[in-house]
Image (cartoon, rainbow over all chains, first blue to last red; front, side, top):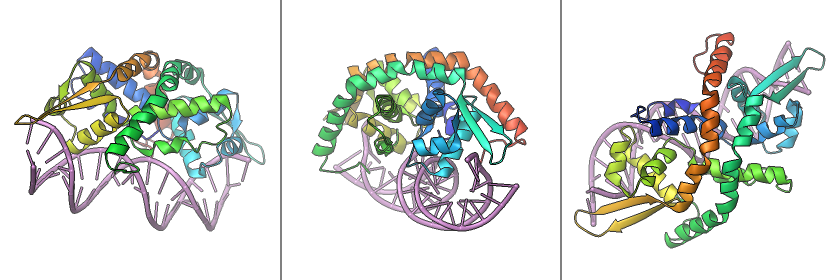
Length: 138
Length: 138
DNA sequence: CGGTATCCGTTCAGATACTG
DNA sequence: CAGTATCTGAACGGATACCG
């Protein structure tokens, strides 16, 4: 996710309608970029999910990152957090309608990715190859 | 952009088709996330653009970031770099068909962002407000 | 003109320990 | 159970100087 969304607003020339669109997409994209946001959103779209459920669904996430990502998504109104004051405590996260819509509108990008991710992988290999076996560009 | 795309592959349970989709979108998104990628892609979609043109089109970008972003986009096959061995040197960047397609398929997300960015701003204010006037979540 | 190299601060993100 | 706190290294990103 990264809270560096302010990065968007100083893009210059926000008067140009096309750049305004860029600005808007960037905002949306930066909101769901980051390692975990999308996966969490997907889990929470299936119905209310508890903290530990999410943790188990994504074995390699750390507690800290799970919490941070949840908070940010909640902050943007993509997730609702419900606390049941029982003991032991029970907290549920669920995707808002807005978040589900977002997920739907990502389908265009999903299609694109599926059509081209092979070509991209090839392009990378070619680039990394001719550049002298650099495993990952520094 | 961020070259930490490997983040995607260890998402666990890549057998689940739905998670595979997540994985694929994430790859695409992380490829164009980052402060500058989209703006550059837009500029380069209008026709060949020179280094300095791009630099001027985005006043607040640093040389380093411009170069890095260009290299990464080139690496992924979204941009072609053409060097004319004249003096002074002349280098042109142009978006590939694949990149233009990507831009088109982002329209769904653009729509979503336009429909909801107000609601999101409000959600943020509300969240930040009740949480005790924290200007930006630490 | 079109970069690269270097320095350096900021933010991201993992591991671990502790708590209501 | 559902977090918070803290410490740490890695990656991101800006400024600047230099180079073919």
